[in-house]
Length: 216
Image (tube, rainbow, N blue to C red):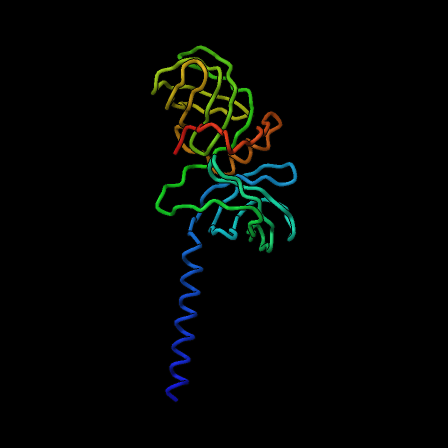
């Protein structure tokens, strides 16, 4: 009887340790936006949880078990993953490349999607043309707008959408300008921009990707 009790205790401890290991490797990341690349398409999904081995992602895609995707949520890591299950628009994926170890104590910035699109900008009643280089839910960065003071209000139009009262957050001379939107985009609006015929996804180089984008 004593041996049986000791065995049950040992089993309980082993199960608890196994559960603790699983919990320690899975980080709850409810509704963290991520950018998903699949079969030549790009869209924005929601990463529901994440671990070194895989993730659960919500996305409006038509994927099947066995499909491969690449996804990222910040500008310094892109993960390749295999779809292992699907429930509606929720996908379970298993990482097939080295996944970045995320520090749960660090804040997660809004996903930045590198892309190219012509942008019409109005500053103090004057119209300028610039090139969008990336966009997030909170803002975007432009090239060729010229040197502007932080806090300057700008109206920006591109990919069929006009954004009023965007604010200059930072400016690097005449080369690059970071803007914050007056109101963060919804995921649906960002997806609409990415699917627009005038939006072109840039080459993604995570070793030399600029620390761009306007929002945290």
